[in-house]
Image 1 (cartoon, rainbow, N blue to C red):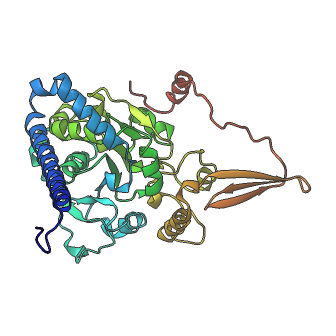
Image 2: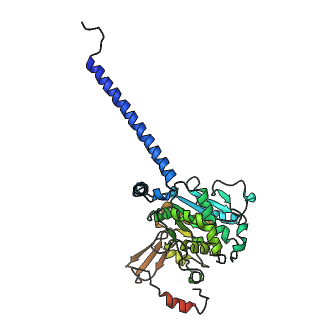
Length: 385
């Protein structure tokens, strides 16, 4: 006789099966979590052992991990900015840095030569500051014409030690460098951050390049090092400083040390050292068709917009950049046949009218015979080989 209220055996069996299946799923999830954690520990412990690192299995696993990581596009959080500055000049340089710095978004530090007591409390609109390490131990190797060259060169080392979690690029700049951050992110995203890259540009002044190197990224214009190269530099820089005690400035020292690794300069024409004087409107109105990345030495040229001081002019240009950074200073040429006029527009900066239609060339690049240039300029400047 059946008991009142008893559940059918089929229902009980079904619930037991469902319960067993849920328990199995929990066990599988736990197993995967524990397994992943153990693999991570093994990777950390063994990655420094040469016999493990050279094994095909380990190499394959690391390659697959890096390939997955590389699928994510480089963004602003992957970049650390190292800014070389001085407490004595920060009051005048601050507007240049704050024109592009984004609090709680951009990562990096302003490296000062001493505690900035006169600038406290420190504003949140400025990058966090750090005090550079004492360089007295390099006294015997400091025969540089620029007395603070060693301190500035070590900004990459100190920035790497301070911030290296989920970093792909380190960008070095001076405290009067104006950076166009969105364009910089887009340009660096073109390159494989897992390889050795030294990215920057020469000076606009031929004499400066002759004096130092055509293969050097000028530091005031800014330059970028990929994470592996920055790591290698941080490990070897102090010894390298002893090998080059007489080079002029920090960017020259960095170029020499990077060359020791066999890494050439990758040129990006959007970096601008601005070793020029006077009116920059011609340069800015005819900017090459590449993203604008930086401006430097704006204290040594006329304000880039008339009827403004230098800081106001930079602020106005950055307002245009905030609308659409990739188009800033990109040139567009239009024609009006009825009046025989030409219009040359440098986006966000200038508009020029020519009362004729000149034959604008498709390409404004010209090839230069450096040997001929050297013979010409050697009459006026000292050329070092």
